[in-house]
Amino acid sequence: MVALIGGIGYYVYSQNQNKQQNTASTSQNSQTKSSDTSSSSNSSAQTQPSVSYLTIKEWGVKVAQPTGNTISYQISKYDANTAQFVTSEQKTLGGACGTFPMARYTITRMTTGTKSSDTVLQNKLDAAAQSNQTVQIGNMTYYIVKDMSGGDCVGNGQINPQEAVYNNNLLAALKGLVAAN
Image (cartoon, rainbow, N blue to C red):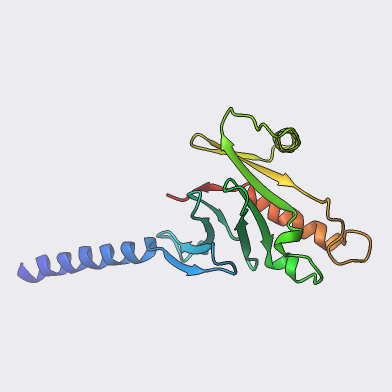
């Protein structure tokens, strides 16, 4: 009887240890000093791969990192509600691709329902909303703004078809923005 109770106790203990290990999160620095990457997995880790996240700690949100691709961000030094995003895929193209000055996507966050006093910015936010490139989290709306004004990033006069694919991959990832809780 004592052996049976001891066996049951050990089984419950080991199951709780496995759950704690499977739900633990780890953090590490990404390519920019302002970004964190965390990984999490669930109890069915054998059937589903773990997901790595880029946490935008200044905003309390995160975005899933695409498999084999690392997203980095930089908060604007002029506006704490705007961040530029680039990927390791974009960097493989060379030239200015994948650098923050050539960032193809920025996110501007605003309290839901408010408008910018900057007409140019408001036009960009409206275009993002019309293109279904917004994410609402809590009382904030995150506008994913596309910027191709810099032209091609490799310097050959036209946007490389591979860059277009990589830009779309980044956009798809950014649309998955969620609360970091």
